[in-house]
Length: 461
Length: 173
Image (tube, rainbow over all chains, first blue to last red):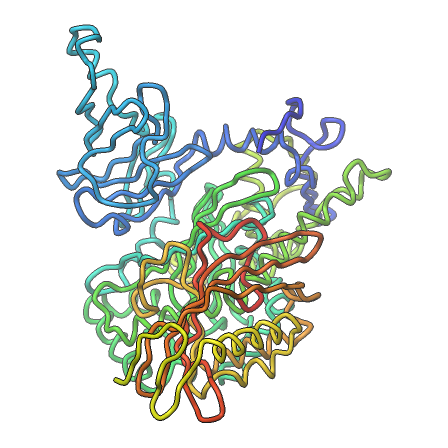
């Protein structure tokens, strides 16, 4: 979608702030143009997607030499492949000759990518392998070298999660991830033989700004009213849902974490009646296996709570009934492409695999019993927020995210049913895109623990 | 296995199933779904029937080896019907308007008590001033009883490359 709105400095109406934070009035507001404005969107693509680590995919999507997937990140078409030596490579999916999309398949296995236009061919490690009519080109070994496939400037992998950056000047990946790396590692330790993604990727698109998808995932407040029918289903299958003892953590760097204990059962971790008796016995065995392999405390940390991890700006890891990796790709201010993979234990029995898939997709995804209501919610926001654009009273054109702010001021651990995780996301967002922020009053002295592990370590359990 | 290869009629057990009978079954289903008569629709499943919607990258994987959009066992189909009848099913309140076209019905293979069939579907869905088109193929396993047909496996396979903006599967595909 091409937008032709003139660029102006980021800010609300009349160049005012996009974020309005007041620690006296316990008010936190986001100007609604942040979800609508094509200029804001362009700045996000340039300053966030163009200059931050982005989640591209998981190594297990391309297990064999020559495997490849194509996908778009920040609007740039990419080839995500494993070369003939087994190394993960990420190339811009454009022929170096004239820029044609080089690989037009979504996935496959190949030693060579050949452009159909003029038949230039490249090896899966990026070398220019064939150049028809090369006698007409300069007799210069540097020429072929200069026509290698363009690799992304940075590529690093944490626990199989492949991240890339379109500029070289980003910090080391683990520095960027900070405490979020630990929660990705917890997920990666679940299976004794490792974890893998499955084929059967949920590809869908929503008529909403990408930040609404982030907010929705970090927002426990909506769970009961939005998912009324799903909560009813859980109750009927014999599982009580509570929001006691559920917390939100600011992991820094825009990353956020919800830790949910009363949410629902988890395959292999926390049994509930709808999983059946076979799974009940396996849950006990699985816990013993994890204790033997990892020790009792790590096993408990992995197993006892559901988690939703947001890794800024485009990765959501749902460690719920089962595991889903969800990736956000902004397409336009009012459109986001979503890709979701089931993330499973390598080598688990087929009956467990089937239960895991059934359980997860009954909740998550555009065909589940819950996600469609989430999508409805943020598409409804996108439709509703045009009502107050250029409003006669500019004070109306703001969204309120102040829930739990008084509690936050007192230095208490944020609840998942409050909006603290969204506030920390927006603060980081404003910092990255250079959006004006109005702050009144004094923020809390103690910014809070970076995660429940640190809280445990400091005895604040 | 008792099977014939005629496109228009197959033998299942002691009786025959005609393409016209399968078409009537599919047309009736389409009508029930377009009219949101979900309780009646649910009776078209045999006990322990299943409903599946694979993802758009589907290459024949079953729901024990790959992610799906929908892989409902009988209890989940019942839960889905109950949910969709609730005004708290926000994604379908108000309901989508749907208009289904079913065609290209083929009797694929007959078993001892079932017939496998395929058909093409084209569903137009309208909601919130938006129009969405779902194109795909049904591949069903139908239990053949003396009094009619029932779904044993109801599988709707999208042929789109992805679910378009707004085109979620909050209704029955």
